Image 1: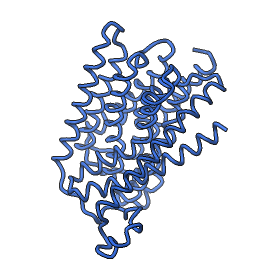
Image 2 (image 1 turned 30 degrees about the vertical axis):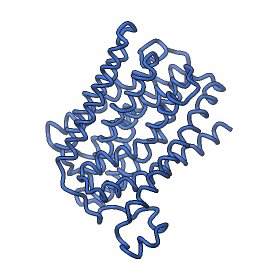
Image 3 (image 1 turned 120 degrees about the vertical axis):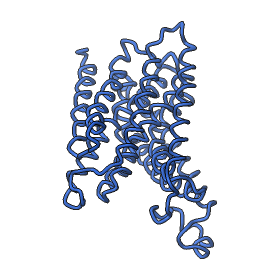
Image 4 (image 1 turned 90 degrees about the vertical axis):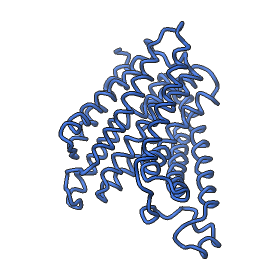
Length: 350
């Protein structure tokens, strides 16, 4: 039964994320926001909402016990890990698979300045967040200071994107999913939906995401208890695989179309968001759980893997100002290495 609930929750979350991404892009267009704000910020936040809502629901509205907090911490740590390893790997596979359709083959003509900008913010924010987990209990106020810093860092990151790019063209956006519900608006303007129907779709999408996350948290807690598996590990490994699908799906579409900066920016933008905003929830509302202990050591080791994967992919890109699809495949090796570490813990070896 728990597996069925997990499957239903995944479908609901992903459907809500797709609706939200589509709606929020149109929301940015209606407000005449910058392209960077719509793509790297709004789209990234939209596709990051599923994995973000899971820790929010677990920590703020769960049972309040160690199990709920463990699910939340696992989901928070799992998002940057999956984005920096599995999402990169799948994008690289997409580049190789579509190389004959792409005008540049396996070479990715990305804007390296944009990607380096994103990765710089990710490394700084995530290093601060993980560093806070090593603070002794008597310095608990330090976690609140780190939380404030993370919010400030992400606000500055958003500000930079809002100021850097030209306005987005409506022709670049997929049709609004709820467009046909507004017949009067279709008659007035068949191409651009009215703001009210855009807002309705965004609200409906948020409802689906929150509802799916609530179902997911309960199912993970029950399943972990039944299997005798640490909730933090189960949430870290299972949750992001499904909830990161929006980033992976969008990136594959853009890779096929040769829009490599959009494909990579959607992932790196989500990494910045995940390193800053969800970790603030843990630092403020579950500071005792955001601590490196014997029970959570393997879970926090995923952060180290994420940093190594990012370095392996983006340091060569930064030095050469070039990126190829094969370079992204290294993310798969880091992902498998961590799964092996998790398997050793589940098997009682470590």
